[in-house]
Every structure is written in C-alpha cells, then in structure tokens.
Amino acid sequence: MDALEVLTYIVWLVASVTFILALKFLASPSTARRGNQLGAAGMALVIAWTFFTVEGMLENWWIIVVGGAIGAVAGFMGAKRVPMTAMPQMVAIFNGAGGGAAAVVAVAEFLEFADHGAGLLPLPFVIATLLGAVIGSVALTGSIVAFGKLQGIVTARPYMLPGQQIITGAIFIALLGIGVYVAAVDNNIPLFLVFCVLALVAGVVLTMPIGGADMPVVVSLLNSYTGIAVAASGFVLGNYALLIAGTLVGASGAILTQLMCRAMNRSLFNVLFAGFGTAGGAIAAGEEGEEQLREITAEDAAVLMAYGKRVIIVPGYGMAVAQAQGPVRELMDLLVAKGVDVQFAIHPVAGRMPGHMNVLLAEANVPYDRLQEMDEINDDFADTDVALVIGANDVVNPVAREEGSPISGMPILNVDAAQNIIVLKRGRGAGFAGIPNPLFSNEKTKMLFGDAKPSVEELVQGVKLA
Amino acid sequence: MELSAFELLSALFILVLAAVVGYEVVSKVPTMLHTPLMSGANAVHGVIVVGAMLVAATSEGPIRIALALVGVILGTINVVGGFVVTDRMLEMFKKRPGEQTRERR
Image (cartoon, rainbow over the protein chains, first blue to last red):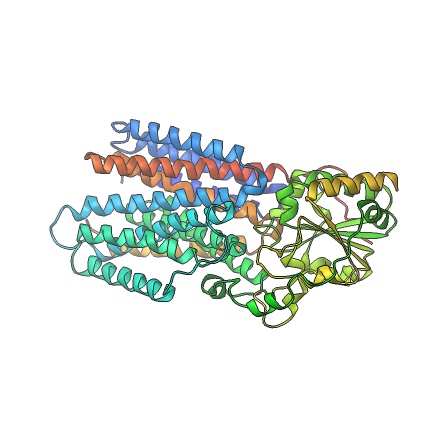
C-alpha cells in the first residue's frame, strides 16, 4: 500500500465522519445548518480527492466535467427554484437520481467484469452488484412515480392493476430466479439486463397502488433503498466512503420510515400493500355531504380569537398550498400583542411530510418554540378557547378513533375538545384521503370557506379592528 | 478478481457499525426536523457520484462512457440538489434572539 492509497483511506474516514456529524447535527435546530454544510464539505473533499488522485480520471476528465456541470446546474436550479410546498417532490426527484446513479454504476461494473470470461465472478461481488442494480432501479422508478403523485401528474388515488398481487408476485419470483441464476450459474449479460428492466418495472408496480397521502413514507423508504444501493456499490468498487455513507442512509432512512408509520399508527406493510383509500368505502358513502355545516364570517371568527385566552392553530396542507404561512404569522403576532397565548399544534404527518409544517412556518419566522408536537399539546385543547384549523383535515378527523375507516387508529389532534373550533377550508369536499370529516358538522365547529391565504388575511384585518 | 476473507470481514464490520450509527443518530431527531433530515440523508447518499467517477476513470468503450456520463449527471444532481435544498430548508430555522423562552399558560 503506497502513501497515496493510505491518504485515500484517510480521506474516506474524514468524509465518513462529516456525514455522521451532518446527520447528528440535524437533530437540533441550532446546529442543523452547520451539520448540512459540514456534510457538503466532506462530500466536496472526497469528490475532489477522487478526481485528482485516481488513475485514469484525468484522461477521462471531460466525462466528469461535462456530466458534473449538467448535473450541478440541474440540481442547483431545481433546489433553488422549487417552492417550499413542493419540497417533498423535490426530495423524491433527487433521491431517484441517486438511485439511478447507483443502478448505472452496478450495470457498468457487471458489464466490465462479466465480459472477461474465465469462470464465475466471486459470489459476494455478483450479489452486491445485483443488489445495487435492483434496489437502485426500484428507487429510481419508484421515486419518479412518487414525484408524479405528489405533483399531481399521476393520480394520487391508489391505482391497482388487475391481478396486482399476481403481477407483483411474478416479478418478484422472476427477479429472484434470474438473480440466483446470474450469480451462481452463469454471469449472463442479456439476462442481467432483463433483471434490471424487471427491477425498473417493479418500482412502478410497487408504488402505483399506494395512495398519495402515504407518499412521504414511500419517499422516505426509497431514500433508505438508495442508501442500500449506494452501500452495495461501495462494496463492489471497494470504496469505504460509499459503503459507510450508503449504510448510514440506509439505516437512518429505515428508522425514519418506521417513525413516520408509527405516527400514523400503521405498519409499514399496511402502508405498502393495503391500497389506502380503497378500504372503508362504506363509511364514506353513508355520511356524504348531507350534514349541516355552520358558517362564520371572518370578523366574528377574529373577535372570538382576539378575546380568547388561548388559541391553538392547527396547520395542514391547505395552508401550504395557499402559501398562507406569512399571514398566519401576522395573525399570531397580532393575537400575541393582545395577550392571547397562541400555540401551533403540529401533527406528525400534517402536510405531505413530517416537519413540512415546521419548515413552512419557520419560513414565515414563526418561532419554533411555539410549534408543539401532537403529544405535547393534545391535552391542552380542553382548556383552549379557539382551535383554528387551517387546511387540515385527516389529521383532525375523529373518525380515526372509530373502527372501520381507512384511518382508524391513526392518532389525531384532539381539536374537538376545544371550546370553539374554526375551520378554514377551501371547499366542501373530503380530504386528501377521501374520507368525510364529522368534525366539520360538530356543533362547536364554524366553517370559513375559501382559499386559506385570503381567509387568514381577512382574519388579520378582523383582529386589528377587534 | 479476488476477494480475501479479510476484505469481506472488514466490509461486514463497516456495514454493521455504520448501520448502528445510522440508527442511533436518527432515533433522536425531533419530528420538526424530519423533512430536513430526510433531505440531508438524501444528499449524503449522493456520494454515489464518486462511484460514477470511478467508472468514468476506467471507461474506454462507448457504452461504458455513456453509462459513466449518465451516472455522473444523476449523482451530481443528487449531491448538489440535495445539499442546496436542505440548506434552504434549514435557513428557515435560524434562532432569533428573544424568542427562546416558552411562554405557555
């Protein structure tokens, strides 16, 4: 081992530590940004080191420069231009790109070494290559479908193929069969390519039956998959930086996915295979639309809040879509100036992703110590004068406490315990999950229909006059 | 190509230890930071661009060059986009003086 090689290992070690610290610093709001920058610095180090020290790199410099320039411009523009509401989609796309890259690396390595004949390749090498190819491919197409569903290009409803289970099962068995054959019997290139195509199809087939409301979980899971694919590539290439970074993300992504499922009180299996929204149709049909909804004017709602002691604001996706976080902050400031205790109740899956609401409200400079997680604040609703629900629906739906609904068992915010409930809602339809919400016909509930932004602006005017 | 038992075992050690670290580090993150965390982790696996670069370094035929180019493009999108978008999210969590105290009840 020469000096350069030793230094390479040291660089990998340093980069790996920065990645670990990046994830660790993300655990606290005060260090999170520094953590991300540290991770970026470690990444820059390992990329630069690889570029300048690996043999052959400088002969093929144009691939790196051209590819890097295209990728950097695309990634930078995408990241800078995306509105905060579309953040989950953007993460899905970046994740798909990573998965695609891992699959491409696996394919390139297989083609390179299977070509050289002379007996079977070592089993661990082939297995890692196959894993990189299959998981990377699933992450690629799965992320694209997730992007489509979140963006509204693909139907957010669960889409089941006729004979879905049979197709999924057949693809799985084919992948397994071809994989074993390619690994143990013959490093056959055409079969390997069939294997990759099947994996691409599998990503689509597995993601389409999952409802749009569950996409955050799927994005998180696919993020974890890409990590595993990257770890497999790291093994194939004998690169510890890839192996460590990939495993880190694979493990942390898996935990994050579990945390998200737990927040909805559902198992991962249930999310992935239950076809959310297709069950529980009976309840949905029975209570549709007939109930009386009480409306309230913005002025009356403003007075109710301005003279209350305690107001809890419950933001949901409607606030994100309407970009109402700025006016919401203004409303909070005015109420606080009048001596009202204003808190925000953040359901773990409010919006399209955990923390989605926190990001939006932070963007509007709402101090994060006013944002309370569900468990911290759920008991406080009982002595709250007004619960102001802004574009949230499924996360405050009391149906979740009963049996037989698709969201049964999901913990919800106890909004219905508040003295008064004001719901800002765009229209009279059901929520993202397509389930009617008896909270809206509760006798304590008053509805204020309309886009969240003008509605909140009217509330702001009302509080100013009150 | 040869893989020694020592190499395999080293890889196994790294794999298991990194998985434990990944698990430990994430299980303490508050919900409010889950989206930035997912995005940050997403940026970290962009290190795959290094893998694509290694493919590029040994590229001769047109197929391998094409694969390397696609890999580098996708990997760079992942890395650059991932870190920039995470930074944009975290920019919003800046702590402002005078707001530290919790005023509840």
